[in-house]
Image (cartoon, rainbow, N blue to C red; front, side, top):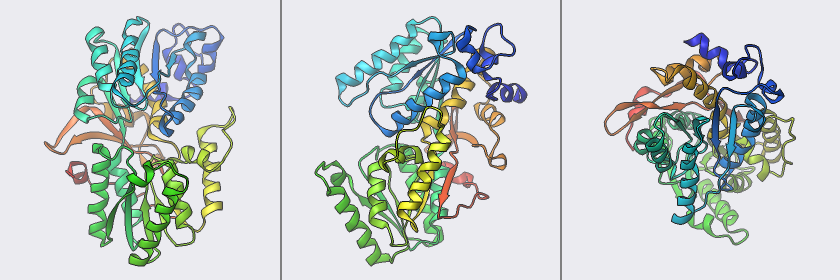
Length: 405
């Protein structure tokens, strides 16, 4: 099983495992007339969010590996518009659910998975129970997603919170800024609780700051002024060595500007990622030949040049973009060989853990009942420290995965 997964996920042979009648074809060969035995649909909600834009960019590179369906390859890509409001959401749900009518599709992957994905998957399951449904970077209630999906794959928010807390363990305080973007999600709440508990053990004050009103005000300079005041207040209270955890690209850059020269550090996870921050930093869009890793590297250098000596803890890619390639390959395995008995084992066999530099997966655990979800896995996203050290030898204690906020 492990050998099979590794061979399929190797870029040089991944398409060969999913193309009919071709034992030695690579992904690009799919565009030269070799037809895929089946198709996988990737749905990227067109919302304008950094996560959606990143995922859409990642899909372009995946089409080169797995082949476009229009050219005989494996991937069919859909980008239905997703907007706030009941009518707009229903339109998006209906568009995704309609994929069940395509008999050539064997799997549907939504990345990222906004509110409404569970309902869309429920409708698909009613019409075609055998159509695989994978939700990446979900924003919905975990139990609802587990019930409606074949597999849910999320970033490991426990590991992110723990790593951020360890990186800030020598800070004078950590300020967790809420900006009104996804503040009520269970993942955000549990990550915050993990950070708070870990920092308490380290004797570091944890301060929550509500910036949602300032972020919602579209007048020029309002949020920048809020960030300036917040950084100045934290410096008065705790000194200059403060850590700021700020989700979302615009807010993150505003706090980076405000904290420049104060000795502060910016703590983060996949939102915003280095790829997402690049646009906010004014970097030109990546060339078609420039991969996400190279673009993230350019963003990291720009951050360091602009804000040094401020330190940063951040991921290269957002969760949805990072998880896409592995999930497409895993979907291909599931179509060919049926679902594995253990999704965590399947993922970790394909992408080994921290020793070899790959992300380590674990089961999602419902903290209210302490039960592992068979079809919901958490995958560690590799964090990058810029002017800040990361302890890569300490994994999050297992009890934190059962920690209830």
